[in-house]
Image (tube, rainbow, N blue to C red; front, top):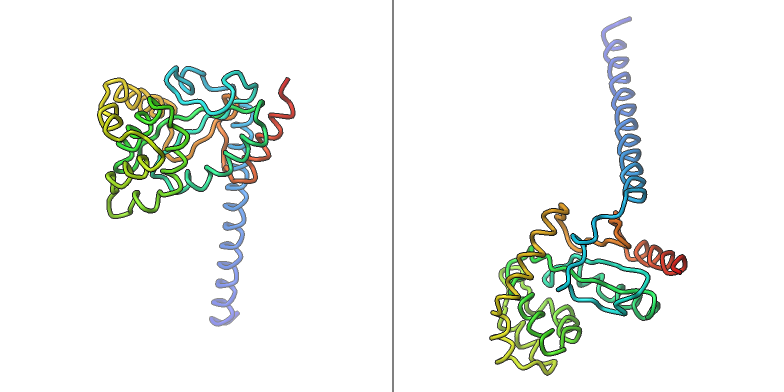
Length: 223
C-alpha cells in the first residue's frame, strides 16, 4: 500500500467515523428530547399554590374544568404572538377553559407594565388594557429601551383613568404581587416566556398548533 493509498484510506475512515459520530449524537439528542417530552407528560402536576395565587388574574369562568396557567411578560414578542391564539381558544371553549395569568417581568420596563395592568384591574379595565398593550407593543416595548409614558397613554386610550391609575400603580399590594410572582417563577425554574402549564403540567416545545391540540384534548376529556 503506497502513501497516497494510505492517506485516502485514512481520510475515508475519518469521514466514516465523523458520520457515525454525528448519527449517534443526533440519535442521542432525539432520544433525550423524546424522554423529556415523556417525562413532562407523565410527571405529577406541579403544586397548585406555586401556579395559582389568590391575586392571579383569571380570564374565563373561575370554575372552568380546564386551567391554562401562562407565565407571561407584557414586553415579550412571543407572548404577543401567542395572545390571539389563547384568545381564540377562550372563544372556542367559553365554559370549559380558564386562563390564569402570572407576571414574569424579565424585560426592562415590564415591572411598570405590570403596574399598569394592576391599576387597570382596579378599574375593571384589565382585559382592555392587556389587549391594547399587546396590540401596540412595538410602539412602546422598544429594543433600545421601553417608552413607558407611551404605554400609559395606550392604556389611557382604552378609557382608563390615568391620574388614578398612576397612583394605584404604586399601591404596595402591587409590589407584593410582583414579588410573589417573581418568587414563584424562580421556584419553578422558569427562564423564558411564555411558559404554559395545562392542568398543573408544564407544556414543552409549545407551538400554536400543539397548544391548540392540547387544550382541545383537555376540553374533550373534561367532565
